[in-house]
Amino acid sequence: MPERENMEKITLGPMSYMSVMPTLLVGANIRGKPNYMTAAWATVACMAPPMVCVAINKMRYTARGIEENRTFSLNIPSLEQVVVTDHCGLVSGAHEDKSGVFRSFYGKLKTAPLAEECPVNIECRLFKSVDCGSHLLYIGEVAEIHAETSCVTEGKPDITKINPIIYAQSAYFGVGKRAGKAFSEGKQYKKT
Amino acid sequence: MPERENMEKITLGPMSYMSVMPTLLVGANIRGKPNYMTAAWATVACMAPPMVCVAINKMRYTARGIEENRTFSLNIPSLEQVVVTDHCGLVSGAHEDKSGVFRSFYGKLKTAPLAEECPVNIECRLFKSVDCGSHLLYIGEVAEIHAETSCVTEGKPDITKINPIIYAQSAYFGVGKRAGKAFSEGKQYKKT
Image (tube, rainbow over all chains, first blue to last red; front, side):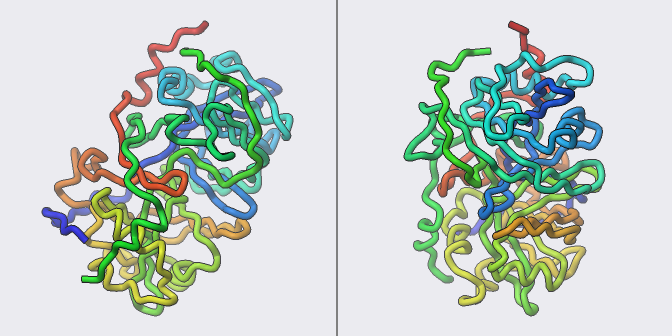
């Protein structure tokens, strides 16, 4: 294993930190109208059944919609959609109608709006919400994945075609170079 | 908003999919010995108090250690550490002692081992574990963030210095170009 040069460590205090996160649009119907909110505090929560989770501030308009219908969507925008994506994080649906920002369609669950312009849409049925303090962690069972045909390789969404937006340190980043295959690179490891 | 050329959508079925995820090493003491497991299903769960979460298969050796001590760590490796990082996902601590893979140190919580060689370490106190099916979603309150001084800018971990590993589609990626500031890019948005 390569030794890193400067190993001196300091403590920074407790922070809601993660190295990299996905940039998403959380879709929810609120009083019958679709709304999209920018979020990044999301990941996979379970393999069987397939689940994802997203943390949302309790005060957010979107939280109301998720509680109302017990469904929501996670929509994956492409890097070229960074302006509209960030817009949905600047403006609250409580003050401005965001139902026209994307063309919405509905899938299996009927009440989780899906943004047509986003290359991938994850349709979710609420499994559980966990009260963590300022935020609710919404865990959703994945009911369906919708994807643009042009962004799919061998039946799966393809990162090189989607070109998703990474979120880190209040900024957006593209995906960099591929650095190897998981469950494979480690075979080179030698005990020292 | 730029129109995407091919908008035709297909359904791929329910999958545990997320566009991009962080590559981490989950540290836990098991029967008094440190162990590190590769994971990617992690994100921030709450702002106040600061919390993170990570999904771990119930069958994993690491789950035992988290239940035992109710503490764990999320260690952020650098892209140059991809071989040792992947190694920790290939080999289970139940079969092979991984306590020597990294030099461990302990922080506030005394029982969450922190990998010295990783540029950032998130020290966590277990807040709640949610049974999702195959996986347990461990939600941890962040007790402390440890970081190499050379990877810190203005009191925060700096992505350009850490060079973290992105996980997507069973492969590792580097971080690409910066594509703008959050809560800022959206100001250019024009209704159509």
